[in-house]
Length: 324
Image 1 (tube, rainbow, N blue to C red):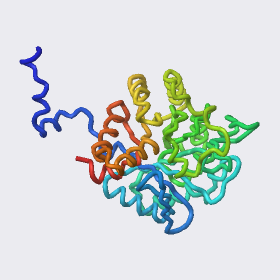
Image 2: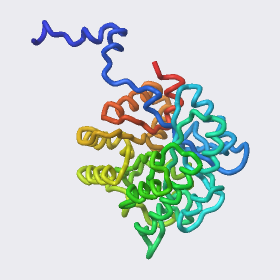
Image 3: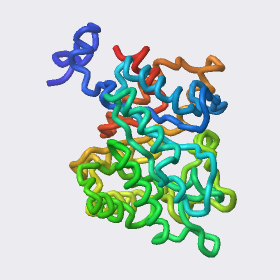
Image 4: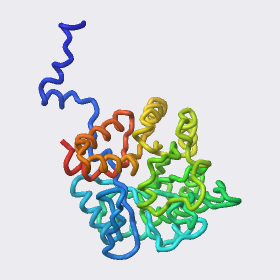
């Protein structure tokens, strides 16, 4: 039937009915809050380009986890700022490295928090690249050793999930085999499968002190125009043993999320990255947008595109103010 018998405004007219027929709803169960662990005690270093986010020493990281739990955000992803760096990233796999110590403290003091550990070398290498440098570029296969070592150490300290973000070929297979060999066959892998070489990462590199000292990451992160290649990357990670696949960034790659959702039947995550967050904050500070409405709309769009999980710096704000 058509107008005037059919009037779609009937389903929008009353706010109660509007809520009842809402197709896509974001809840705290969908959200993962990124946190940055740093050395020291009582340290809360503001990340200037990401208002409201901080590098936190482990004691304050524990308090932030308690605060997140209180508003219903039960999952975090940890990034580490180490005291020292090396050439290979292997320093991150030491038992007394920043992430293992953070896992220990959170598990002891906030046992209900689900801890995901980002696995990469960029925060831990002197050169800022995501792997071992040979002849001026990242050597793929040598890099796998440090990634596997990190995952095994994190699993030993009780991490709930590992999330390799390096974009090396074959790393999911290597990590799965390494974890299984050590008996951690129940530790899931959330692979950054379609991670693009994006300009939206700028503020994160300030947050994690991970900007490359030379060159760029275009030889291993994906070229932004590519879509079919993203499907190949995701499919390969699934074949190699990924339990969850991720698209990063989210907003400029909603089409990739949708294609992945239509093609693959395992959970899909999307990372609402630092640059996307910073743009919202900057516009809101100038009074150009309604921040609360924009945040809710952005997260809804990511879920509507097909994402099951959303990594976002808006997680706490959403839980405190916008979950209605």
